Length: 415
Image 1 (cartoon, rainbow, N blue to C red):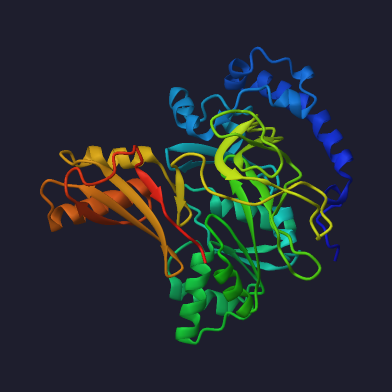
Image 2: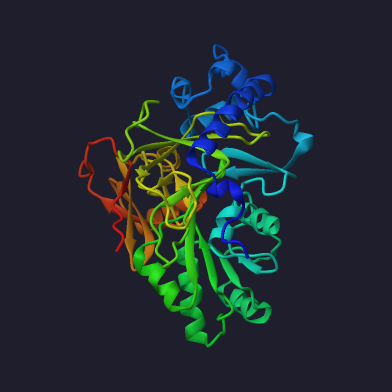
């Protein structure tokens, strides 16, 4: 079997850049002609003039944090898509809320080459534990696996013992999901004596993969690689292993242009400097032009030892704003404000996110004049309802939390 998904991955950087810059003005013209938002957003842009990265850098950045308001003005998609809703297969809803789509185009989210780099091949059976309800994650991975010619078991999340029974019976060759849930499956299988040894590949995402977890999966007999993407863009970059199995950075996907810009601006930073990931995609139905993800990363020098020649980035290096991801779900400052509105009379709220015992822990610190067990339980219910992920409440004296404007404090340190 070929070591690479296709010849695009091994073309010269010069050939790749030429092809991207030839396609770029056509994509901008397509977006302006067919997506009402981009017709207005880029009204002063002549597509034929955007044939270089320098020209692209002069276009405005559409940041993810803006999507909620854009879509609210013209629901559900804000005039951002170029196809009628009759051509849309699914509409997804991410926290915010922010809406995304897919179409019947094979491998719509461009995940197949990333899964191929992880070792998945035609005929494999893939056990997919990403959620299928509202969130696009489950469908993103399913469409990638199907494009490779793999059968998919739609495991979804939860029901750990039932999932172990399914793995033992069906004998899938690979796992797709978050690393934290794979850890749970491995530990529970050992406890219950369930056989999950058929799993040889683990393709993970949506949360951090610290070295300790990667080594745990290797010890369990699985090669484990991760990808980086968003629900709006699909795959942005993905890990690939060199001949000796080492992994360093992530290779940029062939279907996007990635820029690293100074946070809060659209100005590209020098290679190696940390900045915000800005992506231009060539998706015809949802043509995002200079889309600011809010994620931080940096260009990694040198070519990948795996033979792929595209630019490498260091992977996810935090958020350019206070928005962050907890157990695969984004949490926004706006959600903390919504929790406060549902429980009036409180002082400052500060959500602290930590990494304890190989898991994300979320604690909402609340200045409360009158703390009570009833209020604690009620607020914990509100956290789950608003953020779609659970957290604990810790009360503090009025005026005791820092007056620094921070409502989400990510203190996670991975070892």
